[in-house]
Length: 623
Ligand SMILES: [Zn+2]
Image (tube, rainbow, N blue to C red; front, side, top):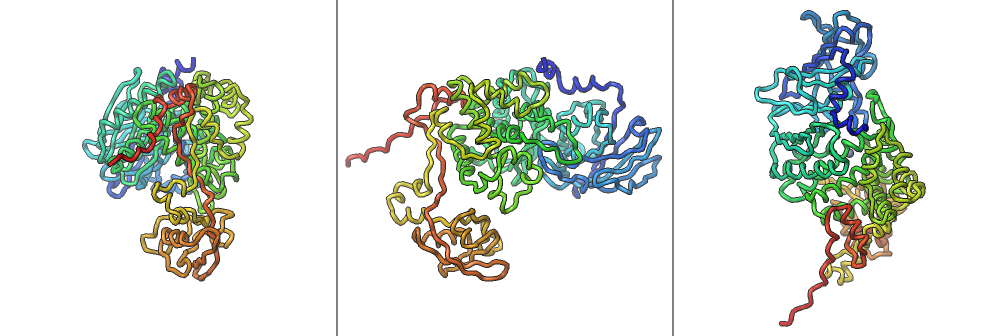
């Protein structure tokens, strides 16, 4: 029932909901594009200003759980009446301005500075304007249900607008403030591509030059969209917009109701991995239409934009979306299994090496998103897990548990499809547990106790059992190339470990500063800590982290090395024991012993045949 209703169109539903309220009109104008300045003029109808109140700006934008205090980018807030401008001074708090009562409505104008190109901040310059509504539009308190009309004036000739909102009377209409906040705008000279899928219209708006094949990007996008549509039996919208901006070092995406903002480095397409990364990002954000936008923890909408909204389910909303993106791009045939096997192997390796993996549960990591996810510090890896990264691996384990429990009949995609079918307004931990139990035939508590509320080590045997894959864990030296593996000296060097981690070399040529020290490691016991500069090993000057590692590898395992470091200007010398590395690296390989059920489960997950076994080494030919 609900599905049918949603297919009728989000905007139509909302538009018929509140027919009687006069809209707030907003005009967005450039002030000085080269200087990243623009302004907003709000026309508040009389009903919205009948009583004294306040104008409030959001502190954060949904999907990115950090208070960003967007009000710091706003100034010159004034009310405009008959050509007279009156500054609105005496702010009520960091993001609220007083609004006097007026029987005839009010006009309020303010300037914004937008010079940060991320998917959650405004960016305006001579080439385009990316307008993030949460950072841009103030709303009268208590007036969130009122419709909006947005117009763009004074931008350079030829600039167009891409947004998920519908066009209306020379502008764009939002049925309420929540929908406006969920509809970013790209204003500029982007290239438009369109395609249709299952009766829905898709637009891909590409901003900025790049070294890739845009046709390949759009075709891949369509195949991904089709796969997600198949899973959920159609789309809960009539129109969806991918906003892609190419900018050096750009990355990340943000999900919205019927659009998404994606940022990509323009020069990543010289290698196929560049396309793979973009396709996975598309799949991730598009899957969020269901997992987060329509189905979510009740706390994640309607939102309180003034501050933190705490959820314990971000492992499900984000981590599981990160896992699902792999199966979707594989099924769409736009990323090969070898790439996904590499990515999953790397992620698993990172999780089993993370020093803080037993310090925090996924549920706790979700709850703490607001203070930790976007505010990491040097000790973060020692005290936390990430709801994205560990959540992705636990999504894989849950998929495996469902497939093993259902003899390959069902998997995690079925859990999402089941939740969507019975979707009744909110996702709770209890509903996810129930769906898991129905599909896997197993009790949920042991899985949750281990991986969601608990902090147990990831169990590779679950993956092996479900998909027949070999989870091949190796010590670093076991992965040396064959000739080095036969070289005792090379093996001894690869074993050397003290627990020190270094960042990228300093461009200024500063000595190697320690990035992290593994708790309990020899370097940790010797008192070396974050930020210490290692200047010599065994009396030899070292400049970079690589230098330090090389000199330490000269020391046989079991012996001690003399390390000279600088701590706040003081030179210190300590002895550090070199040990055999306890770190393990995961490779995901096919297994000759995989049975038909396991192979079928692999194919059900990936849409691909079970991977071929590597050929045995070739015999030397006679000469
Ligand atoms: Zn996400």
